Each structure stands twice: as C-alpha cells, then as structure tokens.
Length: 230
Image 1 (cartoon, helix red, strand yellow):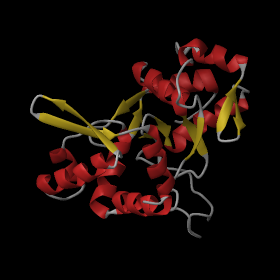
Image 2 (cartoon, helix red, strand yellow; image 1 turned 180 degrees about the horizontal axis):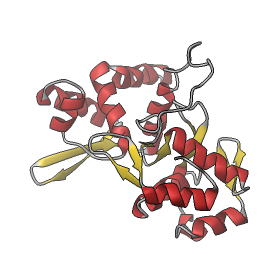
Image 3 (cartoon, one colour; image 1 turned 90 degrees about the vertical axis):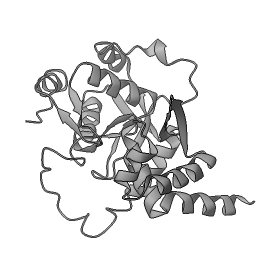
C-alpha cells in the first residue's frame, strides 16, 4: 500500500461521522468505555465497539482493560494534533474572519482541554502573557524557554531537568481552532496543565472538554501573569 493509499484509508477512518464524534470527545484526555462513547456518538454500544475496533487496529486509539471494562483513549499526542488541526477548517470561512466579539466566559471556546494541554481563549491568553514577559518565544513550530521562563515555571514545581530523555517535543505551537492563534502543547504544555489542575486553578466538567476557572485560578493568573479574566 502506498503512502497515498494509507492516507486515504486513515482519513476515511477518522472522518466517518460516528468515529469523528468519538474522537472529538476523546480530546479531553480521559478514557471512556464503548458504552459511554456510544452516547456522545448517538449510536448503539455494539456499533461503537465495532467503530473502536477499527480505530484500535489503525493505531488511532488505545485500550486499557480493567476487570470487565475496556477503556479507550487517543493513542498519542499526534492523533490529538491531527483532530485539532481538522477543527481549524471549521472556522476557515468569511464569517470567521469578521470582527471578533468578546468571548463568553464559559464553554469550550473559552476554556477547554486539547488532549493533555490547555486550549481556548484562556489557553491562548496565558501563552501570550508568557510571551509578553519574555518567558516564551516562538521558534518554528515550538517555543524557546528563557532562563527567566524556567525560573517562573519552578514556582509551579516544573523543573527543566525533568524533561530530559523524552522523545516527545518539549514545546509545540498548537493552533487553536476557536482562537486561530497558538496555545502551548508538547511536554511542557501537558505538565503545565497538570500543575494548574493540581493547584485547583481549573476544574473539569464531567463528559466535557470544558474547564471552569476557579476563584483561586482567577487570582493567581492575575498575580503571576497580570491576566484579568474576570
């Protein structure tokens, strides 16, 4: 099979409506059973299992077995980037290029997970604040982290030496489908979101990619980066 044939086959797998809905919901970095994914895809558990088997065979999802249950999740960050990249085409219209209104302070466009990192209006604002303070600088498809940047991240217990010997890119510019600007992905983006959740800056909503900013999150983002989201 040629590369072109493989691309056609993979595209067909991802873009089939039922599978596309399941993959979209798996972008919240959590694992779900076939029954749970059947609900978001509006199909039967049996049909969902059949679709997941095809995705599993293609290496798009992975499965973990715990007792009688099988939990499915995206196989790796590259799959997440591909799905988020496709979502960018949704807003690629003349309507999307019109003057943007101030975003509503809730919903997935405002604040959400993109696989294992922060996305939406809030995710983009945080990255732009980090750039404004000289902690991050755009470089090709990723970001360079200054020494003052690493010093700032140590406040969240994120240490430079913790990222050695990992094949995944340290940073990556992931174009946000709702903001049309990049947010922070890669190893650092994943660890950054993990620490912010640990510090209770954000709370997850069950069966949703949406994140809710807590009072502590509002205050510390303002104190540390000068971001006023209230």
